[in-house]
Amino acid sequence: MSRSVPLSSRAGALVMVLGLAAGAALAAPTATKFDPAMEVQGTKLQLNGAGTRYKAIFKVYDMALYTTKKVSSPAELLALQGPKRLQFTALRELPGTDLGRLFLKGMGDNSPKEQVQRHALASARLIEVFSGRSKMLPGESFAMEFAPGKGTTFYILGKPQGAPVGDDEFFQMVMKIWVGESPADSQLRDALLGLDKE
Image (cartoon, rainbow, N blue to C red; front, side, top):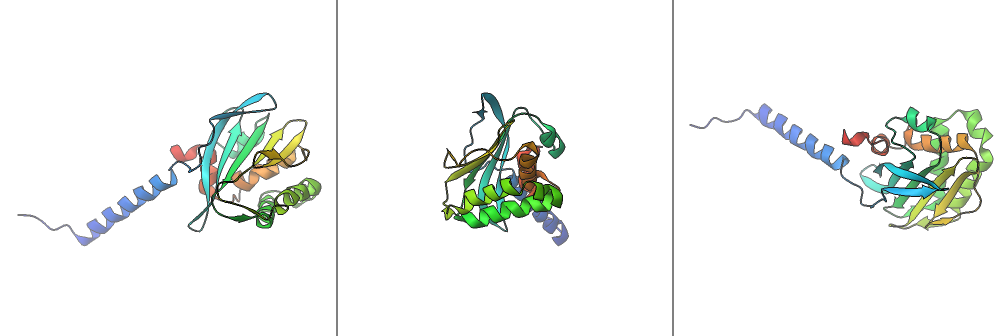
């Protein structure tokens, strides 16, 4: 004789299944196939982590972090010496002006006001680079690459957009947009640090 399963147990099981499914979705690989390694200024960098930026339920861009060695916390990343690269692929149409404005807001949300003001010229260049392009289309790439002693170079479709700007502190401000105390997307932060696999 079969016994009926209490409604509360069935509901609990459903919640568990949905939770597992959501977790699997969050840990799913990005649509973009990022290279496992790349070279910056003669230094080989490895893919530290990659993830997808979501806004509400919409995918905005895929992003990858390249470092000289594996790091798994914001403190480790910010203390790490040497070149670094942030690589992006747009997953929907992204107005250039909006991108620049959002990056600037992210720096303001995660760095002291006086620090942001100290790097006003480099920040203005970041906004200028992206605002100078009406929009990024799905599948198009852009990047930010830091080289010690030279600064940060912005790339769109693989092409450098002018000379490097800023210093190490400026690039730390840029990275804090995604790994700071108020990250653009906490799940993306964990993915960049490789924590989504644990």
